[in-house]
Length: 111
Image (cartoon, rainbow, N blue to C red; front, side, top):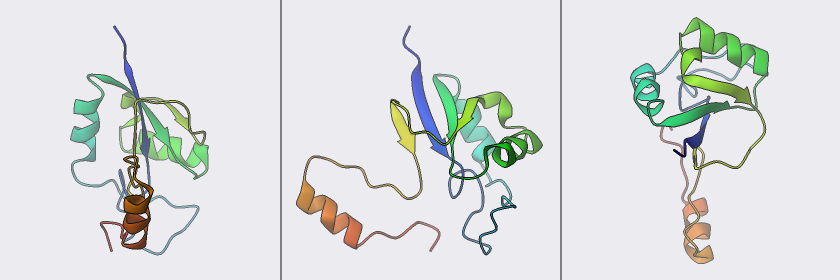
């Protein structure tokens, strides 16, 4: 059976990023519902935390929030995957004009 590999971004997806001023040495609190989301998603997929943060800091945050059991690894390398989940992403659907328009009008959900 093929297991789907999913890369999930940390900031803005699993934590309350955007509610506080950015601090590279501090990761904000877990978002409400993140634990249940990962629990459900991990039943049918292999999850990887994808972050530009310090990998040790991110790993400690996962352990502190009891999320580490859902992830196979923590990485800052974009690897071939079934899906990427990120709060700052636009899905390219084959139309450059539409994509440029989406970029022009993009706003993260928490702003």
